[in-house]
Length: 332
Image 1 (cartoon, rainbow, N blue to C red):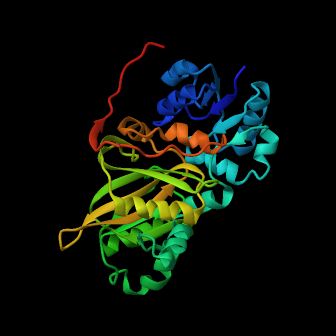
Image 2 (tube, rainbow, N blue to C red):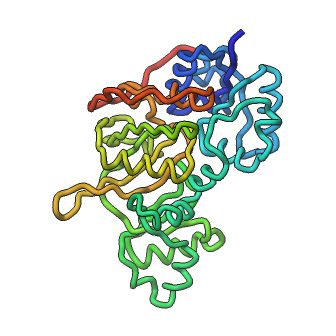
Image 3 (tube, helix red, strand yellow):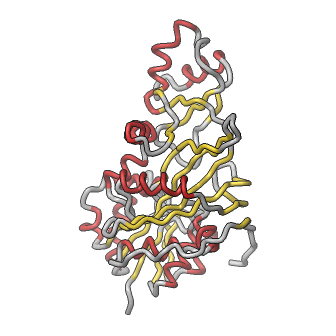
């Protein structure tokens, strides 16, 4: 019998591409999700499916994974959502207790990726890219309340420091809106960042790094149509030596292992040139990782290779192209 991988959250956007990639690797695929099997179409693509508890119920979720890994003799565990990755941040002996290789970056790298303020402070002095500066909402309230928030340059973006999928993000357009935001967030003001609003299109760069060989491969795309929670459904895959060099340098500086995705705002400058302002790094597959695979680079295979002792495959010819996804109905 070959090796077994447990893929979590198989109802998520990246799951089908990940499951297909695991199949190409010859792995037996165990899938789990918070919803029942008949509700999750990707359950049909797995060898075995289990309904999982919510990752936010951390003790119960850890027990579930431990029992499942032992029952199914799991060799690799691949979490697909931030909520699940957060569980492993607080689980120091996860690999030993699970008896499986955890296929994500190390805890120090993930901790940086999951805190937008720490990441900005880490990257800014390195001069690698253009991180968007931010201040804690609590600091803004302390320093600006006396002026009625009238000295701030609006519009501003308000977002959780550890937010995911655009949850909790809002645009603040006036002093009155800022005053209301401070009032509504008075107990959690330390969890929110205030940043300048920069106009432009979202660019996602799927980036895979093998820390053993220090190889890095990047595939950028412009997100033309996105869902409300930030998943691209129509994109343009393109190449940019400058942008890819920035992502390579960031992946090395942060200590990434495997595939992550960097997000930027692509802004047209006054001279007509393009600048990329760094938003965040998601320490997991992007919801649109299938776009990179379709464009010519198998991110899933190469991600798994980082944990299976292989070098990264060369980028080869990645085609610039428009790609769109559609939804299909399946009888369960």
